[in-house]
Image (cartoon, rainbow, N blue to C red; front, side):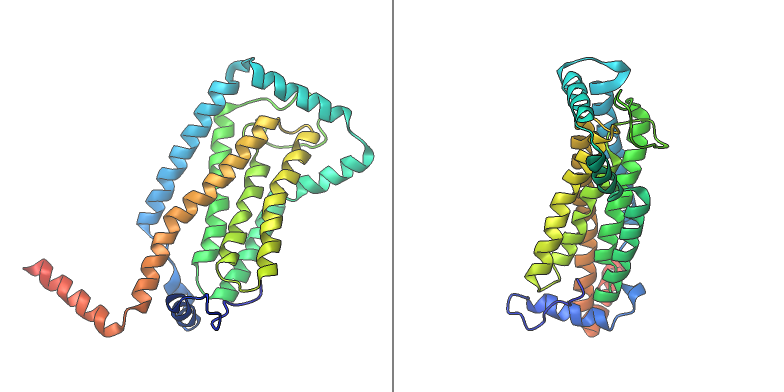
Length: 271
């Protein structure tokens, strides 16, 4: 991930090449793209996502409901408990820690710093950070509303959150895909991109199986966590990408043309 966009690569468009060069000489503070409009969109997305996950979770698992999915969840949880061995206990502990709160905060902080140093703009770093923050906020609120008990098997971990739906660990692991997305758009080294995407795809499955094995989540919690992570990344991209495009368009517009456009706007407003 330490490689810049290859400006000599014929696959790189003139617009992207010019933008990359301009951003190297632009103060970082001038590349900030989150304003009140974007904050409002993120707030609406948070409310809507929370409402959907809370309603689905409560309808499916609230009030100790019993139906076929709940029975399947119970059977899978008990089967995984029967497979426990010391080596698997250790392996799943590592798998679970791949998306522990401390781990995801540390990974996000390091990645954000690398992206800022590498690309000299906020867009890519914000995509990674905002996706994780949005996921965490929706998870915390919806899991509190749903209040689904954790599997009735001996747990191998402790958690300050007693509710099981959805899996915040898995949702955060899926959000790691944002790193692969923004790096893939800017890195010319194919092996780096392939490696990042492999890690991004494999990690949620490792974390999900580990959390189920350790008695912390049902299978349906893991699936819901994956969906939450995917939606968080997509929503973040849908909100921040137009703002970044507008910034790039403004950067590529010559100062004389910008001044004329602003002057025409003022004259239009007066008339």
